[in-house]
Amino acid sequence: MNTLQKTAYWAPRVFGILLTIFITLFALDVQYTGDATAFVTELALHLIPTAVLLIVLIAAWRWEMVGVVAYSALAIFYISLTLNHPDWVVAISGPLFVAALLFGISWMNRKRRTAH
Image 1 (tube, one colour):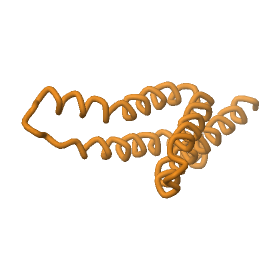
Image 2: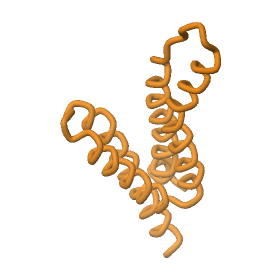
Image 3: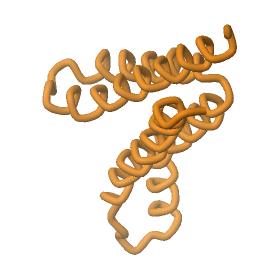
């Protein structure tokens, strides 16, 4: 595997990790109001997107096409939820589409490599 092939393999995976960390940062806006149960519940709800992204990343790590489809679907789903906030659409759906594109490149590279 040459350097370009290694980059095509690792770029989507590293980007997926960074994307998951980025989305996780939004869970940190939970405020502790003195009620531990409410805090844990709110934090758990805010971490659902992180859990979804982790599941997608784990599956996409092995099967790149899963990453293409799942990251694209998540981006489209987010766009459908936030049409009134175009700045958020770009900030969240943009990186999701980039992840889908990177996994697509990785998938095509693997297919080309195994065809020879």
